[in-house]
Picture 1 (cartoon, rainbow, N blue to C red):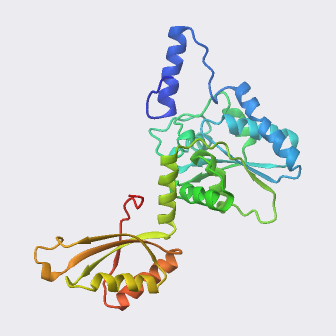
Picture 2 (cartoon, rainbow, N blue to C red; picture 1 turned 180 degrees about the horizontal axis):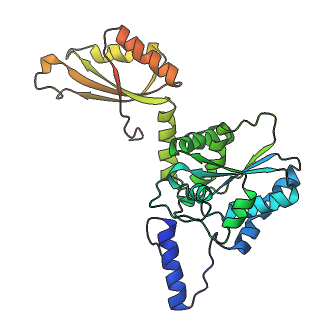
Picture 3 (spheres, rainbow, N blue to C red; picture 1 turned 135 degrees about the vertical axis):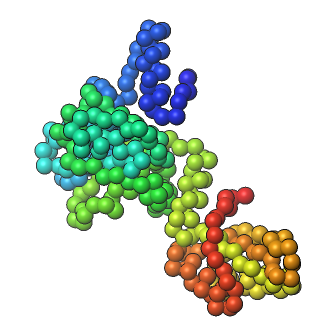
Length: 290
């Protein structure tokens, strides 16, 4: 096993070089119609389970999976709509389709590392041009929300590249249609899972942190905690800093990280504190698992 570079393109360049130097067989993961054909069996499974499918959503990185799925889907039903989904920070296929030829991005930046490809496959590009009806691009924060949805509602761990079709659902007007998102993988380590859960909860206002200046006298901390409890907030972590000011008589800083039901509830908690005379302000939430 050789780990090389920051992107797929870096690794692919070295793999091609090693295959020539050492007489190895280089199997390209997407820029090969034969590989794409094998991936296209996914469409066969889709039509077996749902013959009247209207829309198929498929992730796009280099384009092999999308080529196989879209080509076979159109053969099985020319009227089916196949939509590719790319991360906004690595939308090389969309850029290529817009240009009419394969282009190389200067850089890619996305949490969906499985589709972080600067240059899509030139061998499969004509199939994409012919069979992909549209491409949707998804920002990373929507992938975080999609991950939380899949964990909470479906008890499934789907990697960020595979979450692209889930995130794309909110961009479609598909009520009453049979839509199939292709979840292409679940390759994710537990550290990444924990990080995505944390960021998802913060994005949805279900975990947040506020800072407030308190008079340095007994009972103030308890009063703030009681106000949070009365507003149905659940405190996760407290940081009480008596050294934020040189003059302790001017106050101490309290940082509170807590759980809420969402953005509306978060606002209600902050309003309750402000109504009681505490000028609470939301601030950055650090890692609340420690």
